[in-house]
Image 1 (spheres, rainbow, N blue to C red):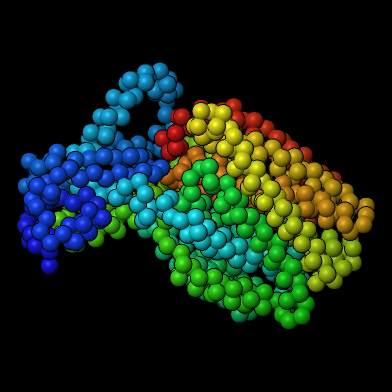
Image 2 (cartoon, rainbow, N blue to C red):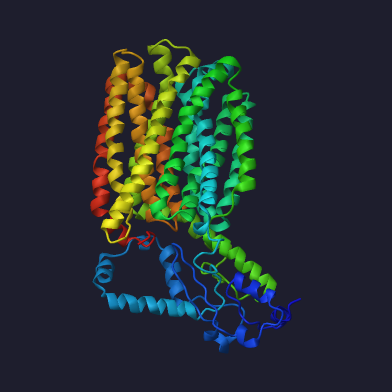
Length: 586
């Protein structure tokens, strides 16, 4: 064994080691001189969480201090600010004071904070700014691998949510249900679970890691999705659908956080574009397959077929998906160093010894509610996304009725019309994702190389125009029984506008709340999933009263009122609102 490492393990007060790569260099040295051990060891943490530089000699006189460290006044202030709901928004006086601070004062404040961290010789961070363990330093191939895996996870659950839509009449006959509202509930209850699951799964991923929460939740979804195929009563099917939806909501809650962990802001657009496409493409693809499955076999295979795909995806996830959340990765690194050196003083920036797991869970599980209750940005975007998402599920659940009753098509042929939605989602995603990144880079260059989340706002406008335009064409063409291609064109335009709106708002959220991206996305998912649950339940009554033309026109007018002002409000007031927020990334 290396003698110097042996002394470090047996000495009750070993020489502190800042990083794992430096510790490995000691192992390779057969007789590391004492002066080399005492030389300045530097480490940097470069990420969305800040940059630190420290000197081990700065604390050499404190080597005999107790193992436990007390929480600093700054840490206590940070904890208090998170625990109090009223502190979710900074006061205007604080904001004005911050804006009025001179450049010299800001530099002195930065040096002071850095000096405080320099004193902590046991702080475990990244080895350097190109540490390969940092997900932002992963290879392009590895980043896209993680993006593809989480996107496929995000695809399969929404596919299952709507695959049974064409089979609802068959399910009703088999289980003895004639009430159309109850049958619509079989679709809506799954989406209702999307509103509840992210509130817990998103914050849990910020405590235990993205990977483990995603994998376990997917297994939970798999178990109850299989159970849906064996249901013998409406009550059983509704219960199993709800429970499977809880597990299936994990990719929607965690995926945004994974992308934030891996990608920088200027690279994030295309990754978010693919990820945002999946929860919309899935509900469009599902009914196409579900219609033929129900017609050729039985409605139960709608659930069993998605379960088979889930098993395949789960295997790929276990093999290829790695943890991406920086605090968790560094916590593992700190634990390993503590075990190898016998020194329990090594810790990460996020580990505070006087905080219990219960306290951490209380803060983290409450964060989505706090964000939704205190952040105007999230409130505005959540309302807009909720309406669009509810409108999408209203169209998805009523789509088979239009083609089977108005156009007289069979279940299988009618299901093929969902392809127009899929085409719209795909075309919109590919176009908007590329333009979004290009526009962001150009606006950043014009702003002296400083990027802002508001640079995502302009691309919300095309989506806000396409959504009502598509819904008007779809509704009135179906009302007057025009050629079947016309309502399909309207549906495709609606789908393209929907994905454009989702991509830009999702990217804006991830850019704004980078550290708490999972919680921010979870808080928005709550409202949008509640809308996805509720809208299909009143669809039949609305169309019976207003018809397809005026019924869809009503929805289109509301979409105009919600969507058109949104990008202008974000462009004008977004930065001001971010500056007031303790949670937003400045």
